[in-house]
Image 1: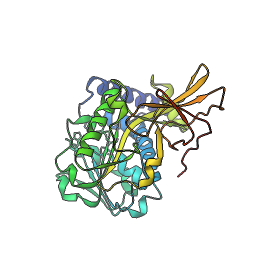
Image 2 (image 1 turned 30 degrees about the vertical axis):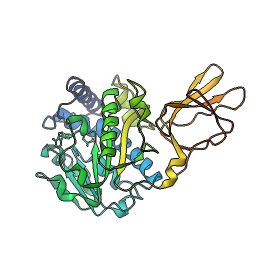
Image 3 (image 1 turned 135 degrees about the horizontal axis):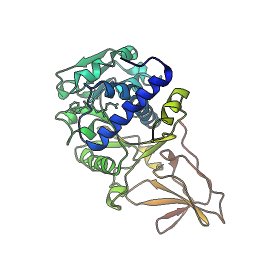
Image 4 (image 1 turned 90 degrees about the horizontal axis):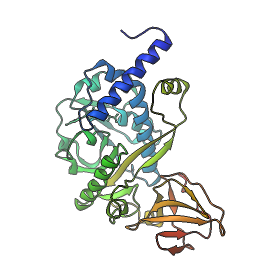
Length: 327
Ligand SMILES: C[S@@+](CC[C@H](N)C(=O)[O-])C[C@H]1O[C@@H](n2cnc3c(N)ncnc32)[C@H](O)[C@@H]1O
């Protein structure tokens, strides 16, 4: 029985979230325990909204580079409640091109328990026995949202898809595994569309032992979520995520004029630095305070590569302000 008063409800949800959080910490590669009531409660009120925000932001990054052009079939593999499918259907620009959304999870309970949320999906097909290669093709996109973390390798048939969208927890371990996967995708004929603006080695993987590429989203939480957070040790003023958007078709050539901000802005003595990526080198955009007004730019965004900067060791010292690429 769900408790009756608002404060009892909130406490019950918070306890469920803590229990599922402990489960994930103790079983980092374990399957989500969908059959347990506490898991369904925690997911609906906490993990689903947070993952939805993460996927929505990855979709936004994809839109900036035209990633979704020509895609009409989306397979949400390890869909759980259908988080990624819901985020795709909620995007006003992507929604009109969707013809079919296929939801697959090893746990049918996961999909069934959240069917009340699926009204916005486009021709949803909820399938229990699914062969991945049956939906592949030139207009198909295979989506993994926080599901690769629960398996060892890509499921058979993954390479039959024109496009692959992967969203993963931004832990060092999962994030670096994703960068290894990036190399595998490239070896198998895929091109990176985001976050990378190049197809060369990933400097965070090859030139560091601990770094991993991840994005940060600033969250404007509704009141009910802020109230829930007050009962939890973890806070979500910002949420992070690691992702890859890959296609068999190469990205537009113009993408190589850009770099991606892959670090937070760091104010140091006499300079402000921010890690950015445009190729196989690990480089920092650098604002030397004596010569240029420092900027604080949001991590994860694209910037036009500066053409009047001075390279000094791993620093790209700017001589004029940078502009964020707008959608
Ligand atoms: C952490 S949940 C993510 C759910 C959802 N995609 C999201 O972003 O919120 C991982 C999901 O992967 C599913 N999963 C794990 N192993 C799987 C497998 N071998 N085949 C299909 N789904 C699997 C789990 O049942 C679980 O629903």
